[in-house]
Length: 161
View 1 (cartoon, rainbow, N blue to C red):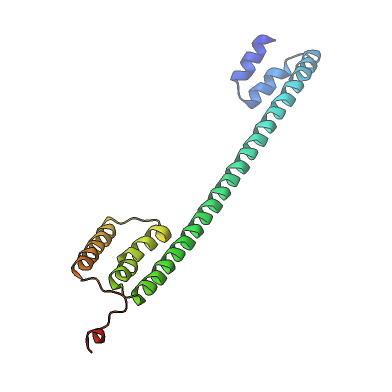
View 2 (spheres, helix red, strand yellow):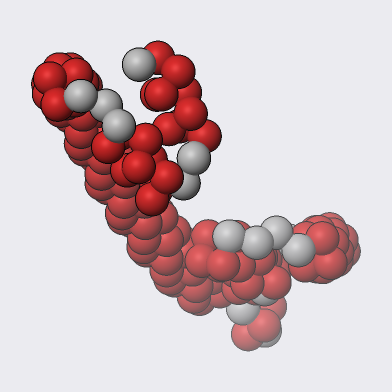
C-alpha cells in the first residue's frame, strides 16, 4: 500500500486513478476516511489565512486613509497659519507705517511676508528667498540707522514762528 501511494504521488492524474483501482475497496475506504479530516483541516487553515490577509489589507487601507486625513489637516493648518501671519504682518505694516515708521513697515511688508507665506503654505524653504529676506532686512536696518530720529509732534511748520 505504501509503495502504491509513493508511486501514485509520482504519477499523473490518470495514472493515479489506475494505481488506486488496484487497491482493495476496504483499503480505499480507510484511506478516504483518513484523508477527509486532513482535507478539512487544510481547508480551515487556508480559510483562516485568507481571513487574516483580508484583515491586514483592511488595516492597511485604514492606515492609508488616516495618513491622508492627517496630511490634509496639516496642509489646512499651514494654510490658515500662513494666512493669519500674512494678514497680521500686513496689518502691522499699515499701523506702523501710519505712525511715521516707514522702515519698520517696509520690514513687515517686504520679502519676509512672502518667505513666511512660502514656509507655511507651500512647506518649502528656499535658500535664495531666505537670503533675499536677510538682505532686505539688513538694508532696512542700515537705512533706519542713517535716518535721524523724529520727535512726536515735530512738523516742518513747527520751526516757523
